[in-house]
Structure formats: C-alpha cells, structure tokens
Image (cartoon, helix red, strand yellow):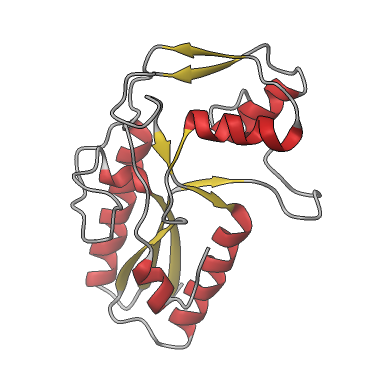
Length: 201
C-alpha cells in the first residue's frame, strides 16, 4: 500500500479555542474515547508516513448525515442511533418514542449544541479528490490533513425545527441534561480542502 486515506473526525480538536476550526487549530485533549482513537490513528499514520514512502491524507469529517439520492443506501444504523439525523427520522416514524436534546444552557443562540452537518455524498466526493491528489503526485507532504464540512454551524434545535418545517411533521422531543463528551460548538473552516482538493460541500 502506497496511498492511504484515513477517515478522521473533528473530534480531534476537542473543545475548540476558536470557530470556524481550521487545520492549524491544535489537536487537544479529546472529549470522548471516539476522539481519542481518531487522534491515536492519525499519530500512527503521521509517524509511519515520516519513516516510509507511504502517502496519507487524513480527512477530518465534521457531522456526516444523509443518504444517497437513490435512497438505496442511507443512514439506517443497525443499533440504536446516537447521531441527530437518524434519531430525528426514527422519532418521526414512531420507531423511537422521543428525541432528547442534550442540554439547553450552552453558549449558543438557543442553548443547544452547534454542529456542522455535511452530506455523505460530499464526503464521498472528497475521498475521490483526495485519492486523485495522491495518485497524481500533487501531495505537498507525505501526511496531509483536510477538514470536511460546510463551514456553517446549526444548533440541534435549528435542525429539529427545519425538519418540522419541511416535512410538516411535529417531532416529540424534550430537553434533557448535557451529555458527557459533547463540545458546545464546532464548525469547519474548509478553505484548505476547497483550494487543495478542488472540493466543496
């Protein structure tokens, strides 16, 4: 294997010092075990690429959501979902009794967490662009990192209200306590991916 694309995550940034978050933002103490594993994998790949000819691109996803336009593949987790979009859709069709919004006292416009939701087909397109960059020898170093997001932050309550407005379906949701491991707000600066991968969400 001479080229490797790693599916990383914005969780490597921990609770960000500033937003939008760019790739120069320090990688901080992760707020979750998931974030810790992404950090660890990135470090291993960075070390390996420094000591070999392996070319690595780490794509830091923000919050992937959605389905292919054909509806043949989509966001249908086998286990109980924790991501917002499948929780919303399951609540809407009655597979889940209620949706819990974790926290209402964050420093955000409506008190709920802010995230950057990116469509899965945009994530797939970024992978193709990253692969072409490596195979066409356009990488500027053996280990590169790019953020994948829209550059826009939406609160959990904004997403819920948007779903309700578009579908006309009222969701059964309640405000709960904060969830451990959640950062208050994060959204991406994707200018580097736009410029270097010729990609845009």
